[in-house]
Image 1: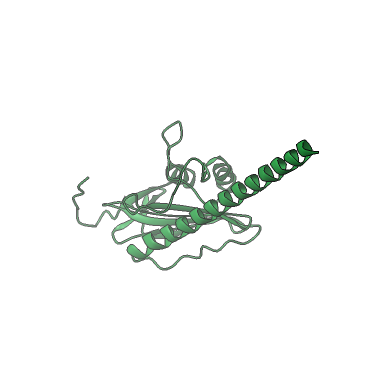
Image 2: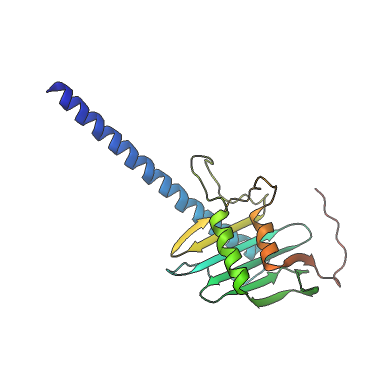
Length: 193
């Protein structure tokens, strides 16, 4: 009888520890998504860009990103489902080169191929793992934030290179066929690293 009670108590303890661990991981993932959303908002605010809708609804697939470097800064929001649109916004003297043309702000209809490639990227990109990273709140020294909405769930994308040395934001630029750029008519600036 004592062995049975001990086994039951041990089973209950393992069950509670597992539940507690899962809850802790879920809270960390949600906290990181909130941090990534705040990062996008903060960077857009620093660059003087209007607020961006970052809410997440079921059936939607959305990638929101903001980045800031010494020479260029901007934000992209790719709404893969249902609209199939990408909106580009440059900050100050920044913008994007699309089809060989500089544009500070632009909305592009995504092709079926681009939408499929973005779906594949979202599945491939590393998600925040609370066991691998204790805290992934936005560090302004990094000046990069990325948030994904997938079917009503928000999560942040770590700004880390994969085995090929490619960052998620660089893959996003490749699929959208855009490159961040300075306004060709803007005065030159010097960046110190």
